[in-house]
Amino acid sequence: MNRRHFLAGTASAAALLAGCASSGESPPNTDDPTTDDPSRDPTTEPPTTEPPTTEPPTTEPPTTEPPTTEPPSDGAALVNGSFESNLEGWTKGKDLPADPNNPDQKVDSEIKVTTDRASEGDTGLFGFLDGSADDGTIWVQQEADLSEVSTLKVDGYSEQESFNTVLQVATYAGPVPEDGLVERDFDRSNSLWDHEGWKTYEYDVDHDGEGLIAVGLNIVWETNAAGVLDNVRLE
Image (cartoon, rainbow, N blue to C red; front, side, top):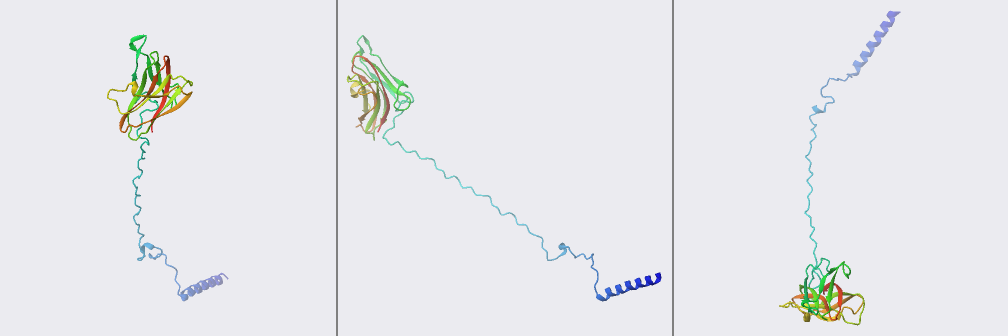
């Protein structure tokens, strides 16, 4: 019986081999060097890498222009017209009589900046005069181009209004005097004590060209008196 089984198995194997031979198929050859090897394909080109085409960004130069400064609208800009920088730009002047009690001396006077009163900023121009001689003028002055100026303005302060003319606002706007200013050169038409508090005084300017501006106080009463001026401007 075992011999029959062996012979049957042998016969089946032989039939299987005969079927494969008759179909003409052959098992794949895994040793073929051209199979699944792209490097051996003659039509396959290696990929090319182009260099980067990025160019550096261009930077335009700045086109910002410096700001333009408009010239002052008035004909002349006074230096330190509100006395915020002490008396910078100004020169003191005075025309005083002799002291009746001391003929060899002039009457007392003082002109300086003060922070007690101001119509513009923090400081004003303080003036004091001894009126024992019933006369005397003090001022500050500076040169300016008056070519396009028609008006001189100055603010004056009075503690109280008085019907008596004691202190006068003294102003000058004109050519530079060869021998300097004296009392008679000033416009003294306005009393400083014609009001209480601050008041603006205006004066016509007729001179054309380089000239001199001066503001101050004149006393016409036999007493001591003081006043404050501020915010001198040309228009």
